[in-house]
Length: 128
Image (cartoon, rainbow, N blue to C red; front, side, top):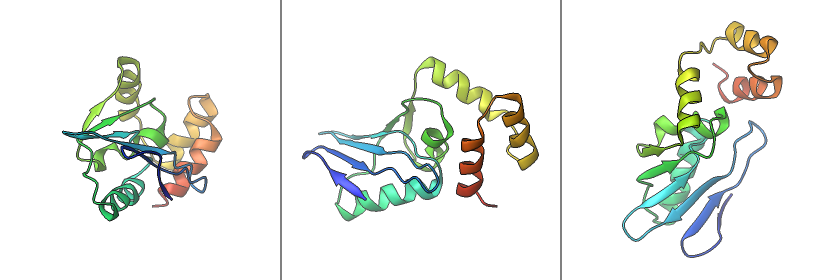
């Protein structure tokens, strides 16, 4: 559900089914800001639909709070400029080289690079 906190601040609630985090929205005079990029294109689509229902402009910028998959895997669907700190960017560049087939994901869990919870949530969000 999309919630309004003030005339300029909104958010899409967390959905624990596939670990979709809260996505924030700040309405500016010249442009708007999305807080976190969602865990998938589907997650971002729901967010954008909620903005459209309220006649709110799509965000020009997305700020990433941290590198975890549930906050970043949807950023390519935002069509916005991404803002992240250097440590987050470094981790995202590392993850970009990772393989995402089931075997590779399971190996990262076994090696301690990833946790089983995230592994299972990614598989639920991306069943193909």
